[in-house]
Each structure stands twice: as structure tokens, then as C-alpha cells.
Length: 91
Image 1 (cartoon, helix red, strand yellow):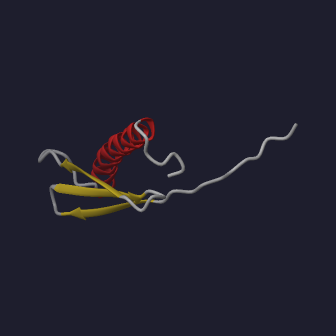
Image 2 (cartoon, helix red, strand yellow):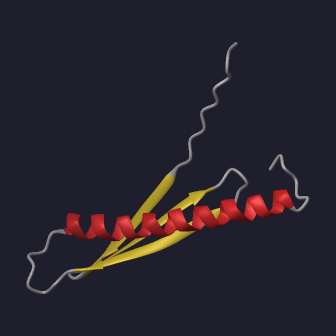
């Protein structure tokens, strides 16, 4: 007995905006249905810390990705609800 394997790739984009003390990140991804999900995160440098852009990017990016994960869970729950109540199960 063989089992078919399917591989799917979803791309996530992270965009950053920074100034001396604040880094903002926006995470976005488009679902196969065409729906666009986005979330934002930010990180603020403590004035006593030395400036290191990579730390702000990592913190803001992680927060944006966490928000995106929550939005993806909400989208999946919406799909389940639609499927259970007579929506198109093939979508």
C-alpha cells in the first residue's frame, strides 16, 4: 500500500521600518484561497541599551509572526465553521 504525499509552500513576508529607538515589523502571507493575512509587531530600544538593529528586528519580527499565527488559526477556525455548516468542503 502506498501513500501519496503532497507538498505545499506558503510564503511569509516580513517588512521592517526602523528609527533610532523603534522597530516595526509587518508579517504577511496569502492563503491558497487568496485571502491576505497580516499582523504587526514592534520593539522599542531601552535608552540605556546600545543600538543593535538586529535585536529590534528579531523582537518585532517575532511579535509580528506570533500575531500572524493567531490570524491563521482564526482563518482555519472560520474554514472549519463554514465546512461544518454546509460550506464548500473542497475550498
